[in-house]
Image (cartoon, rainbow, N blue to C red):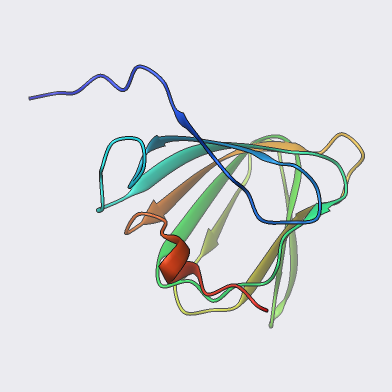
Length: 120
């Protein structure tokens, strides 16, 4: 049976500035472990610690620029573009432009603080 997700849960974000994470589907809001879907709103100049997650992450940028720094280089994705980050590879996300960024993040399996493995 289909389930309506009427509203998201607000999740505390990591990083140097306040970022709003609205989890619609995932371990917290819907008790879903197979995947998570969250809307992100990051301020300009936000950066989070690097991580080596145990999940694949798909980020669809809705506004602004999302930067992904990896061991292979740096990717800047703008509105209408996406970033695919495979599990097991180190990545660091940031929003370098003054207006920040809005994007949707999908993790498979669902995001978990225990599975993200952030840098110290």
